[in-house]
Image 1 (cartoon, rainbow, N blue to C red):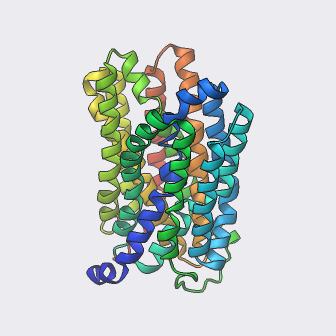
Image 2: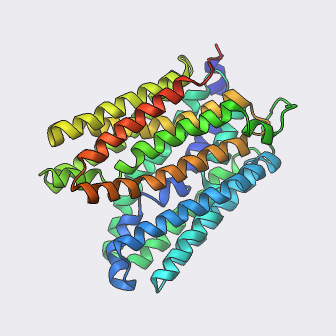
Length: 388
């Protein structure tokens, strides 16, 4: 039956993967650094302002996501996804025309709100509606495209910016985002099949399981996600060369890609909350290794951080669908995803502040490990979900 699901549903997985990779999750975060130096010269954008703009964008995204979920549940995934691609493309065009820091921050906030339909909400709903026994693996392939976009787009974009300038670079990024219309149009035009539910979305959000799921992934994101942007500076402070630190940052990306497929495959066979707990444990071990041994075990820390990032993206959609069904999936997943994004956005702030206060990353790494232990305990309290 699993094979028959893929024979029937592979076009949806392919379209969803392409759409997610060409959406805000695949194109905004991983390309921002390419423009930072030029924007600093052109409009006076500081590192602090860059970080503040990203956090503002994250907040606006979180505000918009419940509305996106309602739209997807009500009208199906196709047209919300199309509008998200158009909005993201328009946002990049506007970024290419900014002339002040205030203008940059305003456009970033607008991208967060209006391009929220290009997040995985619509795409994972389409995949979940088609897959059941192989749902975890299908979602893993869907989220895989974010990692692919993170590897492929930045080098190409960096070449454009170096030769043509940052404004042309943003226009090129807008063209890439606009290509997301093609996979979006391949999604179902109506909501996928879902069993009717006597329990409304509001009641499901107030349930113990939903709240516990929210706390589990929120704690996981708050604990570890803040280390991702600090990983290279941490290694540089530990005496590692820029080239070696950059190479290990690439290991994080590779680990994200591999873990998304592996964790998705495992979720179809093993209790998903236990997989999440195991990934948290691996990440905690990696943080302790970084804290005690520094650069000599940095490879382990890179693998652990990438595994945690990859597994979280897979399992949020998987567990939401398994616990609550598809009748209100868009709204329920949107709230879970918004919480994850907010906690992940807060992470770099507390890690940076604690590192500044303590004079290094030793204490933040220990705090991260402790936070992951709390996440493990929360995941182990979730009810069983195995469908086979």
